[in-house]
Length: 275
Image 1 (cartoon, rainbow, N blue to C red):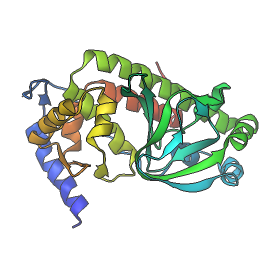
Image 2: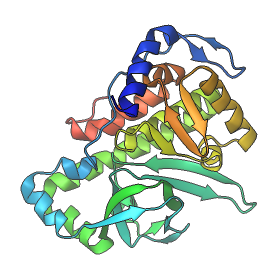
Image 3: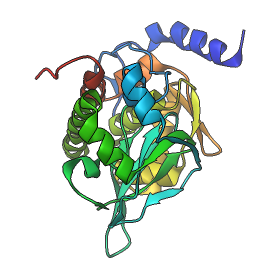
Image 4: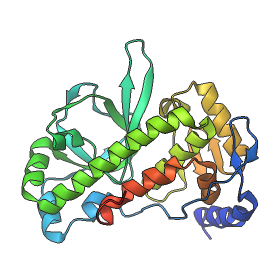
């Protein structure tokens, strides 16, 4: 049995023990939040995977495989969008930098979407700085090829529009979550969203610095939140890597925002959006 299988079996064995328990801001465990129980997608970029063979062959001629290292900048803040990226296992972060040097993450994109979709709305400049948060594979195409595909391929255009809506839902839900929910719940949500996007691996690199951007708190707050989730046997945090030990328990530890964001992220691939 592989180490990954062993961890998953161990997580399944602990799921009953962690049922009905949610870490709160003071580190105690109480409350209730049911997990959604749907395994992460492992089939590469979902936009490309959803295309019919005829459209995929057209798109494929313009795609280039790229490996995105951690911290690689795709667009500087207020820079021209020269390429669109379709992450397979990489996770991309959109950061807003203030004049005083403060940084906050305004959104993340993984295998459920594409990076550079401002082009779809007619924009040519990326307002946030955009960089690889978790290293991994992606495919890229030029801005000109993307615009041409949107114009000539109806299913591709439709699914890109739905993914744009899903991303807008993520951003708006994150704004509400940051105002209303505790740091441990928000940390669990971001770890789950990252786990969804890395191709099924239970361990992935994620630094305290990026988590502080994601959660909008100082590193001390990140350490405290990770400590609560670690003591609850939901994750392991070591050497800049996060390992998910108990996925169902982590879903219960998250607020309802995770299920909402994941639902809308999946709807472009399941038919019309439902309110």
